[in-house]
Image 1 (tube, rainbow, N blue to C red):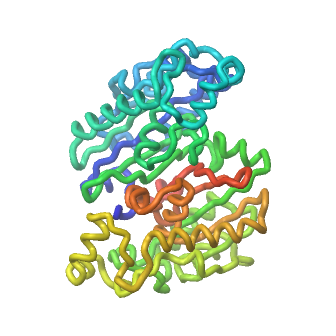
Image 2 (image 1 turned 120 degrees about the vertical axis):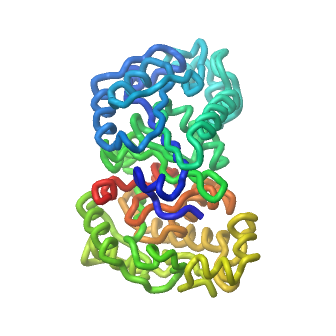
Length: 427
């Protein structure tokens, strides 16, 4: 499993390869819901402001390579970041052929069957240009080339397009590439981060546009339209996190840094609706920092039960249960943790049932859930329609990190994952 979320130079210290994707700033055509594809589209004034806000979050020393698609809107965005960069046309948006310059509504009326196929994520060629499958091949090859170039402890930033980012995310999480995907499309200038650890890629952060507001893009539109918003908060740091001890359902409290993290989060995020929390000390303390009164503790939000591994350091588990550990974390088997604990399938059912039951009583509300790394990850994977494979391919949310899910028309959609701008200031 991936370790704690690491910022800047910390990632290099631990030998992690990282590739962060940033969507370009808004263009006038974006605002008009026009298909752009490979056409020239310049940044609007709002788009330029979005890029400047994103630039304030970037540590120039954190990236070995900065690459941009060669289209005007991405080149302009890269220039405004103020970092040396190179261009690579492989990172272009999907080619929509003769649909370029035409509105979404216009194409839905003139070619409804094709638009319906696109909504489903079918592999149709759009306007004589490219299909989703062709886009996937192109950006996967570009991603692989970049990873080989930066090496095991390298870091790269790619300024690219919403379709290119969503294509990589869809392949990684095994979800639809269409407009009806279980994830909300990346917001202009949002960040999505992949980290390579223990021989595989983990998606650690998705659609982090928190420099534009904690709710942004389509998620903000859903909130204004009366949809329910679910905010998941991981607890603050504990000494067990520092020592790499399996906590499971043990009652660890926050350490000094964890309390600082929780206070920093409270300065960023003010819950406006009910707060439900795991009763474990670390989650209860974090929830109390957000709201000293009225937190509702629910056993179903507890961390995965680690069985005989609870309270043991990772190295002790590796030594004492070598075969079980290898089969679980390298072999991909969904075994019960610590022989007597839970497996991922059981955790997913527990979290999904718990959240479903809570949300029945809170239509059109903003509800906060303070829980744990694997618990939050399991709920997100259930939203994606995934299983143990997707669980293993998803990084753990950083301590006090946020994840937003939209509930609209009885369906959950992931808005973002692993968002933690308050930790950037703490270092």
